[in-house]
Structure formats: structure tokens, C-alpha cells
Image: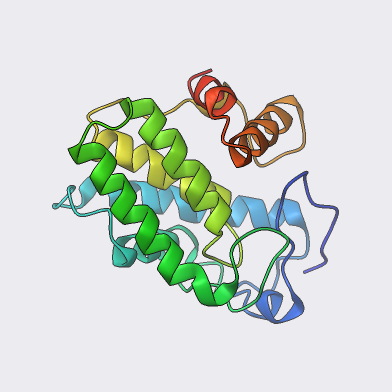
Length: 196
């Protein structure tokens, strides 16, 4: 697959990661997006049919959801990245940082540390910042966040700006800017964006 110009904030794949593309006829980013979107739809069906909805704050579930989202397209789906990227913690710290995040979320929920939307926004931001996987981190962290909201916080999923975050445009720009504000510990723009 040719790597075309990526949207702002997207993570480029390295050549070894591209080699793990399961559908060899994919040649453009648009084709890749269509196949991934179909696979993500199947993952959403799986989310709706699973029995135990309270067991999502663990490493196995985080990996399983990513695998379900991209397993028909990428051989590395559900596996932590083995390379460092333009964003994310060092590849050797992924498991440690993820488990710290999951423990923090459990604590925040049990102790009502923040309002539900702020817990979810903080969770999303930190999961994106860890950047567990070679690709699909934004989509994965949004679906994980919506699952957290519905399964554990008894809230409606976020609207995520009401637009397509996978393409260049105003909605994606506002999203990336809100994440950058959260990098500086200002969560207000992200909390506002996710419900807009």
C-alpha cells in the first residue's frame, strides 16, 4: 500500500507494519479506510453481544477490542506496537502505562474523583497518549471510551464533534487541538468537544 499524505495527527506506519496488511489488493488510504470501517462495524456488533460488560478495564480487553476492530485487515491487530512512533510512550512502557491508566480509572470511578464525562475524557486522552498499537489508536480509544461510558458509567457515548475524525477538516482539527490542550492538563476543550 502506498502511504499517501496522512491527516493531521495521524500515525505513519513503518514498512514492516505495512507488510502485515492482510488484504494485498489495498493500494490507497481510501480503500484501507473502507476495509477498516467494515471491520470496526463487526467489532461494534461484538461489543453489543458480549455477556460480561463490566470487565473492560484490563489489558486483555483493551487488546481484544483492537483485535476485533482490525483483525480482518492487519496481522498485528490486538498486539502492542514494537516500534516507537511520532506519538506515544516508549514501546517498552506500553503495558506499564496502560495498567497505571486502568488502575487510575478504577480509582476515579470508585471514589467519584471527577464527573463521568471528565473521567471518560481523561481516559481517552491518556489512552491516545500511550498509543498502544501500530495504528488505529484514535478509533480504538474512542470506542474504548464509549464502552466505558455505556458499560461502567451508565452514560450515553460521546458524539465526538459530530463529524468524521478520520479525514482532514474542521472537526478533526478541533479534536487534535483539544487533545493538545489536554497534553497541558487543560481538559475543558476536550470535555466540550466530545459532547459537541
